[in-house]
Image (cartoon, rainbow, N blue to C red; front, side, top):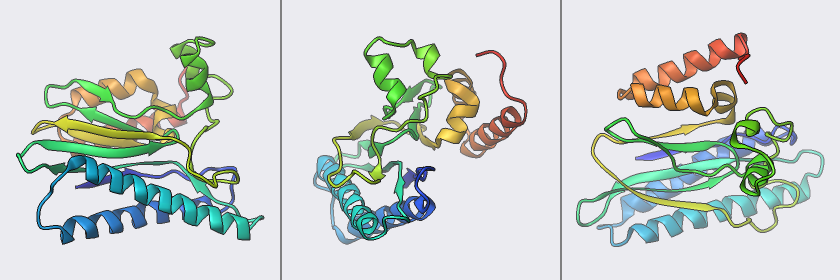
Length: 220
């Protein structure tokens, strides 16, 4: 199955369109391709096709932005496909650009963040200039360093490609920065660990994010 989330860049006025069309186009192209092939020869090929579609979407948005200087658009993109190879092994393959996230919740409750945030604070933390804890409240935490489209994205920057084997009962979850900012990593991990039912998991994530949005955290 297909999983994806795109979150428009708020500083660009037409970004909701970019987010919606990026997900819709990626879903349509990849599902059409998988429907047409008679057998799956290579998981790496699917990953490369997914990447090619992300590049094509970026190119289309870049062309639009060149023609619409006052109505620009851009979006994050975290998306992928869960499928089995010819040996029956399950895989998740995906791409990530921006600060939305992909998590793997294993059947045993272990939580793994599959994606890496393309943000200024993540870069500062990787350079040892701030701590992981400081990332959560840093003034630059919303500055994205990579995305689909945008004023300067003529060529899509190098980005993360994900290929991970999964087991029956595992779940892959996509979250936008709105959920991430409100909950923070500790609360996200706790909710993911404690809920193995997809509907219960999503209900708890949204309910807790809304609760914290209305009653901001004071423990940071």
